[in-house]
Amino acid sequence: QVQLVESGGGSVQAGGSLRLSCAASGYPGSSYCMGWFRQAPGKEREGVATIDNNGITRYKYSVKGRFTISKDNAKNTLYLQMNSLKPEDTSMYFCAAARTGMIGILLSSPGQCPIESGNEYNYWGQGTQVTVSS
Image 1 (cartoon, rainbow, N blue to C red):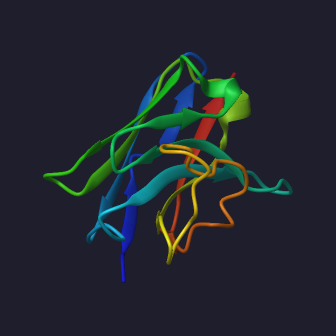
Image 2: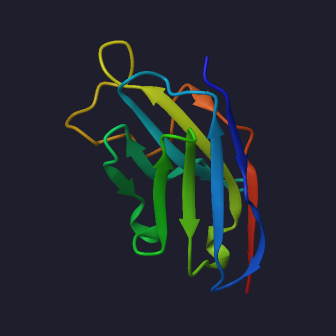
């Protein structure tokens, strides 16, 4: 069982920055995907960024160049650096993880972690709120 705990959310003005952290009790396996997802009230959950065990990343188009996902294996921590924040980035942000391979997510190719709805992920944190004011 993997436990995930997010932190770092808050309120900022448009153009500001925040760094989200996700402390993990461990990794789902030797091969895995981890990601950041967000959900605003009345909207469906959407993927923001993902990273696999080899450090290959994927980003939602609207955050490319502004957000950076990274991980520190020594600290079992996932990060999301968010710069140039916009009001439309306001949402609850969740960290997620899943094993990949025969008993987990089957990837179409290395690093292609699912980034759409997050339905493939089976470990989730409780979320951290990000609010961006104009």
